[in-house]
Image 1 (cartoon, rainbow, N blue to C red):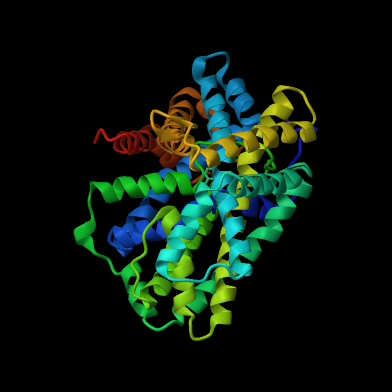
Image 2: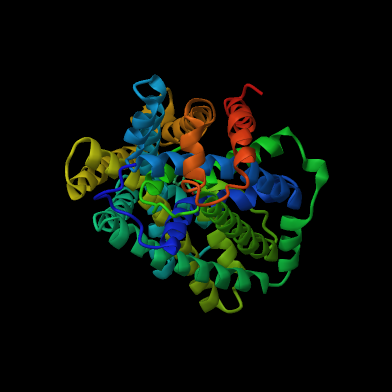
Amino acid sequence: MEKDNRANFGSKLGIILATAGSAVGLGNIWRFPYMTGDNGGAAFIFVYIMCVFLLGIPCIVNEFIIGRYSASNTARAYRKLSNGTPWAIIGYIGVLTGFLVTSYYSVVSGWCLQYIYASAAGHLKGDPQFFASYFADFEKDPIKPVIWAVVILVITHLIIIRGVKEGIEKASKALMPALFVILIILVVSACMLPNAWEGIEFLFKPDFSKVSKDLFLGALGQAFFSLSIGMGCLCTFASYFTKDTDLTNSAVQISVIDTVVAILAGLLIFPAAFSIGVSPDSGPSLIFITLPNVFEQAFSSVPIIGYIVAISFYILLSLAALTSLISLHEVSTAFLHEEMNINRKTAATIVTVICSVIAALCSLSLSDWDAISIGGKPLFDILDYLTGQILLPVGGFLTCLFVGWYLPKKIVRDEYTNYGSMRGKFFNIYLSCVKYLCPTLILLIFLHQIGVI
Ligand code: PFF
């Protein structure tokens, strides 16, 4: 283990908040609530929690073991452990995935910043038609979304260049509690609206008739993305963990925080939407078209509350996006810093500049300049598909095989038990999951996502 001269997180709380910050992101707020509502409510939540425990936690622990043992960026971590065999490629896939996701994730994060501005300036007022055309016009604008994407990348950059302890850890300790406070206040306001109960019921009433293959595979895919598995983020952060960090316990805590935030997001969105009789949809249209309309109408009797709720909601989204972006940016920064032997600031600057260029191209691919498309699909959609549906599952699948079948069991056990200082009660269960269950489940998600099953 090479721990000397390498940055570490300064406290257990810092480790949990930074890693949970990576996990808690746009996926929790715009995708989870919709998937729950659409897939049988509590039945989906139950299956999702099973997926988090059976697939998510073992996969998180895998990345933690590789990262902490190697104390290096993701590419070097896998390279060190693979002793000249082709397994090293998994690390490079992780870095590439993290890099590509940084670029397109910053575009959507930039939209959140625009909506903070628009709601604060009082621009978000009108009928449902207005909200749809406001978003369409904004998305097609060749300049504004690019500027906002660069702004959020620069904010991320300013945090990253301060280093692991002073930058990432301090920012997470400030941003994550802020995110929780805003979320709780918004949930309470939404649940006090008339008819809110219908939304709560919709979210939680188990409808077992909806339990299907799609529900299982959807829940698995959502757990994977939401927990930031397969992108090098968890491995990179684990390389900054201290030797006494309890890896399994940390993985459980992070998964619980991520799941609680996702459920709370549902308790914000459904009661608000049902109070005005709107059925929430998913993705960009939920966040940028349906919800501004919901906030305006739901609080129409006291408009100032609607105004504050809308601004707070977009601040919440931006905080969630920012903490995820920090972890994504760090994957590429640590890679360049260590592999090219350049200082951290220069490495971060290169990442920020290149990501800004790709983000600009992604954003422009959605505008009227549809020249930036491949096979008729905008670059934005291609990156989304390539990373989410292909690279992520492939990286996660190979990592399970690598840890379960290739790595010497002694290394895995030593890291799992902190070199024998803990009992490692669940080690055998963990290892069986990683060897058999997780690769099988990931393969199923992958085949489902590419439409084979
Ligand atoms: N987990 C984040 C979300 O739910 O939005 C997305 C994400 C962030 C995925 C960082 C992967 C990652 F490395």
